[in-house]
Length: 103
Ligand SMILES: [Zn+2]
Image (cartoon, rainbow, N blue to C red; front, side, top):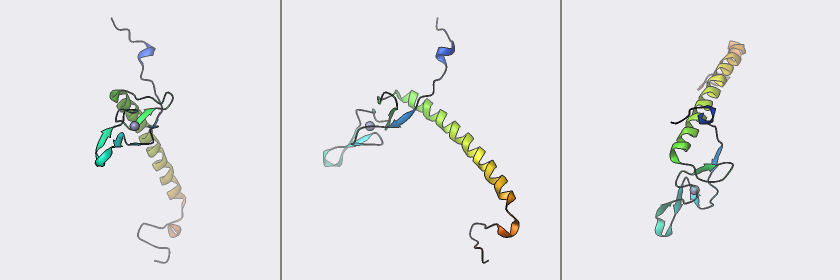
C-alpha cells in the first residue's frame, strides 16, 4: 500500500534553461537545417536548476503550473497596487493611453 504522507507533497523545484550551447528551446539544429531533440534536456528546453539534468515531462508541467499560479498571484497583487496608486494621482495629472499631456 502506498503511504501518502508529507513526503508525497508536491515539492517546488527551480528550473533553468538547458545548459547545452546548441539547445534552442529543446531543439538542436542539425546538418542541412534539420532539428533534433536535445539530449541534455530531452526536448523540454528546461532542466533542474540544482542538478542540471532533465526532468520527466510530467514533473516539468507540474513545476510550470506552480510557477504560473505564483505569477498569477503576483500579477493580481501588482494590479491592485497599481490601481491604488492610480487613484492617488489627481485627475488633471492623469495621462490616458493615446492622450498626451497637451490634449
Ligand atoms: Zn536542451
